[in-house]
Length: 111
Length: 111
Image (cartoon, rainbow over the protein chains, first blue to last red):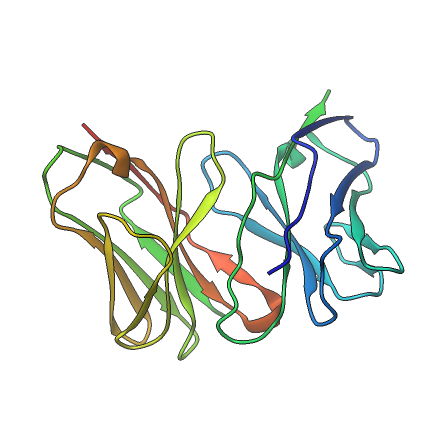
């Protein structure tokens, strides 16, 4: 699986958009980009995933660059409950391929 | 709908005692199952995964073992706990390319 690079921590004002970057310069053609988040003392929660097109759901938007070497997770209106560690992972969907979590980005939403 | 159950939520065990953590999945058949561990302030480490009954793959050498006696049951065990086995243990099941769903976790403290 390709490795990802994320900033260790970020702050965001409540109500503003939170933009979390991820670099995955060695991503291969069949690997998807996944985002999870982990609120303290809970299991990670799936947010969104994509292959090459931008994706949006009720939680967030995922913007993937045309060369697929980086992506940005956007939380459009951050709330205090969005304070969590956000993990960016790249993985092919083939059976037997696992998720390997890095240390992620610790996002703090500030009142 | 699919659900994943993990218990107990917290556990305090003395060094040298045995361990058994159980995870069960409902609402699906033949899931891929996973055990992760998260040490305090660290990322998630994949310990074991299973693609079927009796099929266990270990990611890292350690003091722990895993078993899958039934299709939707995954058990993490140890014969003699070490202090270094303390951590937050998470079970997950795979939804194919939609990623993982995690249980609520077990916080193990070895004293």
